[in-house]
Image (cartoon, rainbow, N blue to C red):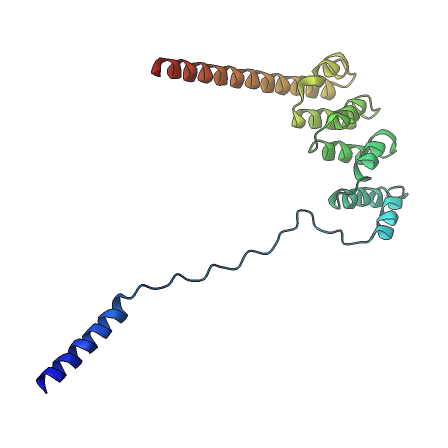
Length: 198
């Protein structure tokens, strides 16, 4: 009987030890995250988008601007041509200023062309907004245009902003040249170290 109890005790102890030290299976992998759309779908259909496009010609300047902002948010292909047209032809200077500010967040040659055209606007505030947008973009390829046009403007504020913009563009160009020089020196030192290590 002692042997039977001993065998039972060993069996129970072995079972308990097995349960205690048994490897735990890994948890199942989490479900994949939901697919993220790269572009949100427009909240309106194409027929309604055509109405929004027509609203860019409304008599009320606030309606025109809100229509342009909606087209831009929907990533409509007509948005930028409408902004360019507004910058050139709209009679309301505040809308042309807003168009310059919007273009300051964009890049591309057509954006710079539109802003350079706005440097010849009749309203000094529009010319100032165009200079600030060019400064924000930081493309120094238009520095020559600024140096020959707005720097000689009749308005003192425009001349001052033209100088500030040119200073910013010069700083950016100098920083790019310095970064290229540093990168060249690092590559040269790395090449020399690699050649010395062989």
